[in-house]
Length: 129
Image (tube, rainbow, N blue to C red; front, side):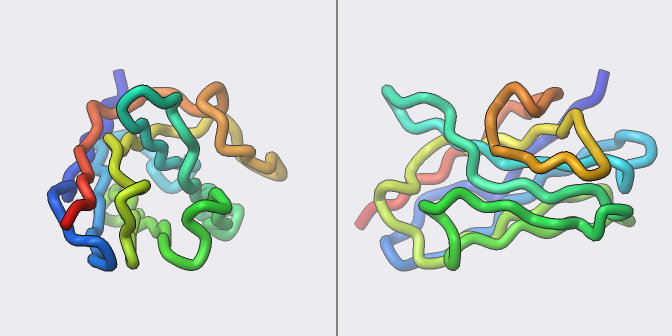
């Protein structure tokens, strides 16, 4: 079974930054898309961003709520996905999860949970003064 492990969460003041990492030992890592989701207390899981596989140019998708503030990237040699989060706000407080995408090729990800599998355990991000 594929395991994804998130790290990098923590407590940060509004306007601050964090970098989340998601590592895995999956074979042929470069063939897969990966996504970041988050879930705040009492709310449904929300898609944040995804990055397609390297053959598809590692194209990225972002939720409107994070566009211009978050950047997703991948390092295929390290088998790691990153989420650079800038200008964090209290509404960004949530547990952040990474997951592996089902699809490749021309598929356009809509950042819904059903498009992803092999969910990590999550890392807590808290934005508070």
